[in-house]
Image (cartoon, rainbow, N blue to C red; front, side):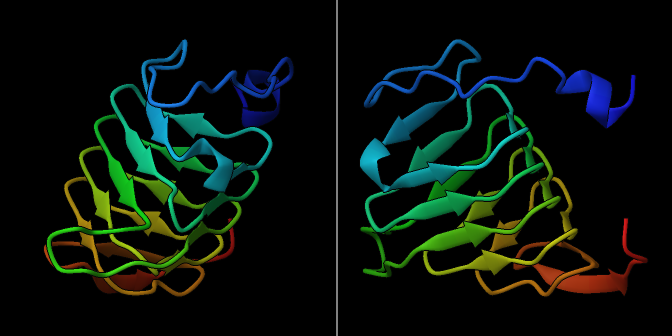
Length: 136
């Protein structure tokens, strides 16, 4: 099944503050979330949008990810932006103030604590760009 077919009947998910969605992911501070069309967020992913999370169109986020716009451990805060067509592998963590570039892929189990440019594959703890990719 192609991406277009997969999202033929996509509708904006109903998001209730601090509750699991129909697909078992959760948002706290939902007023700070901007969610694009044709997004796919995996089960048990957590989004804390206190300082803003913007997820552009056609973004895929794997299961068990955490995306934070605030960190009470180290006092960091800032808007997280995930540009269109980006993919984040399961069990990854995205820290406050990070932008993930258009078409970029984050490998599973990565700790994203810095901006990622467009059109790259990045992975690791902490995340490092490992390869430039052709525009998808």
